[in-house]
Image 1 (cartoon, rainbow, N blue to C red):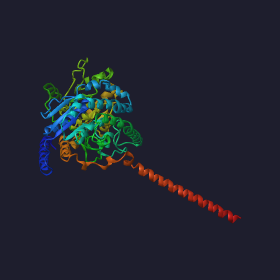
Image 2 (cartoon, rainbow, N blue to C red):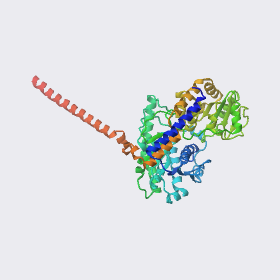
Image 3 (cartoon, one colour):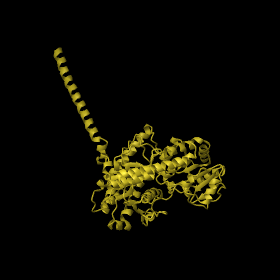
Image 4 (cartoon, rainbow, N blue to C red):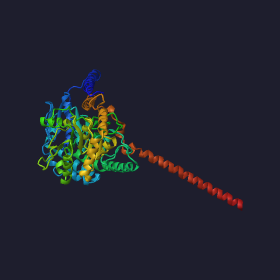
Amino acid sequence: MASGTRPLISKLLLVAAIITFSCNSLFVGETEAANILGILPTWAKSHYIIGAEYLRVLALAGHNVTVVTPFRLGDAPPNYHEIVMDGILDASAGLEKNYFKYKDGSFLMILSMLYNDLADTTCRFVLKHPKVVTLMKSDQQFDVVIVETFMTESIYGLAQHFNAPLVVFSTLGSNLWTNGLVGAPSPYSHMAHLMLGFTDHMNFYERMINTVVGVGEQVYYELVYLPRQKRFYDEAFSHASMSFDQQLKNTSLVLLNQHFALSSPRSYPPNMVEVGGIHIRDVRPLPEDLQQYLDEAPDGVIYFCMGSHIQSKHFPSDKRDAFLKVFSQLKQRVLWKFEDTSIPDIPSNVLIRSWMPQNDILAHRNVKLFITHGGLLGTTEALYHGKPIVGIPIFGDQLMNVQKAVRSGYGLKLDYELINEASVREVIETVLMNESFTERAREISGWYHDKPMTAAETAIFWTEYVIRHRGAAQLRSPAVELKSWQYYLLDVGAVLVGLCLFVFAMIYKCLGAVRVILDKVNKYKRD
């Protein structure tokens, strides 16, 4: 298909989607402007970006949105009202800011930090913040409460407090703490734990490790973590209209920052919906100097960014110098998000900035490669624009995302421990010289864009569906009412095993009795 026809087709699809929405409204009834409360509880900027964009598009759809947030949104609509939680960065001051240090820790250490340090800090801070307490004491009413699900179960109680349906969104896609809310199946055979770095095609050893880790985490989650969250809930909502367990089961909708084309196909109940890429806005004009830098790069540009958490300035000097040495020998230009612009001996083909408009840069035709830490936002943006990657995973889901890129053929992995001139040059030259990486990225990008609604339109529709149907209980799976031992049929299995053992015991006993009789008969014959 000629590239010039693609914008026309995209516009026609957009018009068709708008007409479809208009027709649907005639049959299901329009959703009047609703009062929406959004809770963005974490200080992590990448998490905030997804939640803020979701709530922003709800405001643009005409709803009155109140947002409890750690940051201010620069271009907030007039009906987007912010309650900024002052001091959230001070509350997280005890957490390590040089994320390269987490590379030396095991995934168990990361899980411990999430389930203990991060969860306790976040929930205590939000539920006891004076502005949140004032909001709870106010007479404001909301039609739906939206909370990020990231070690925040006790904060869900704001939904019952305001007598509103609960919608949660996950910045990490589906996982243990989202699946249980709506009874989504999560077999260990092909759904890898996000911290292990496995893909959806695991060998026997990987499936065994995945199962042991998954079962162990679920036991800890249910027996240790959730009871602690329940204590936070009971302290904050002493006169709650429903218990902590009831609030979890009354989750109306889970939105996932995930898309099957970018991750893996999954089986979901109807109230678990993928909206991966919701944070990606329409491409905006670049600053004039960046636009010129990109336009005038005949051999293309490499964009290098380690995300909002991991900062390139924390690279050890030997690894930083290895990158600079290799970059100086390339014919391509390099844009590097580097938080210390005073570093010495920057090659002439390298431009360093402490911040860059990543999505707008990746959209440029001359960007040939994205060097990234493998975060979900960055890899989603890369595939959205059809760009291959070199991934340097450090912790969390980054290894899994990069392994997915390697397996799918649109990227290579660069081990952090092995960063030197030779390894950096090898992966960069391999991706740049082999067109198959770019072709594969563009193919997957096509899969992502081939859908009836954008991620934002999908999120708006299902949020309004929950509002229209007062929680949409018809979407909920009966699986949420089951205990783990019921869901996995452990009680049925135990009874069946017991019956089998009983039958074997009876057979053994009968055979023993027959043997005794035969021995007596044989003895009688001999006598």
